[in-house]
Length: 306
Image 1 (cartoon, one colour):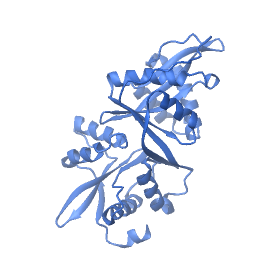
Image 2: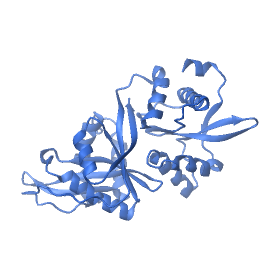
Image 3: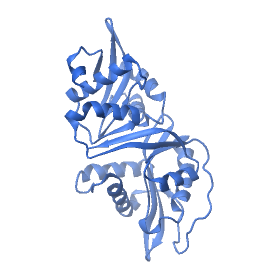
Image 4: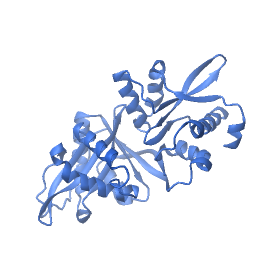
């Protein structure tokens, strides 16, 4: 990192311009599962004509000209579209991007994306942006582009289960506690104490957009959310599931597998033909549930949380 700050950079980081939008989309679309988050914002920019301030272009100088060779989305989380090749130019690109990120970008809440790129960047920016609160170096990236496999063995006795469906704002007060419980378990802090307004605004947006799914059932005599999941990112023909959750007292009864099958059907019918997600490698129960409905491994993600 120090060497990259001292030498003359061959790559620059600058706000993406409208004239570069087509090239940027082509770059990200080379792997839409890995780069669904940048693609979501790029496609929104193409539809609206408004360039998002958080989208940065990585430009490589060539004589008097330059070309877009990478992207950095620096919203709440940072996700990068960079070369993973083991070449001198790719190494130069990653070094220059890391140096420019330290100089020009605000540290995000997390670095998230393909593991090779994410961990490489983290290794370069750690002296300035560290320490990390937690590093998850290996998360299994999975996808399904077909009808889900049907599963048996669901124990629904006494639950009076309703069908999995899209949430509405009428469900919000019952959906919110389930989302908070999931968030605390996954991320490690209570979003209602840190960033409540933004968290609730985001959840309401997903509900209004038809990207939040839930299932009701009876638990301890009360009607509660027993399963839920959201489409957290949508772009390039890919819908990335986030926040998959089953009521703690009902885990191990097959609700996740059945619920996921219904969500995949709904998402593929109305949002995108491919459904993806990523899961911690230390959660074999979840991985088996995803495999049971037809998800297959397509790559490796990493997350660095601050």
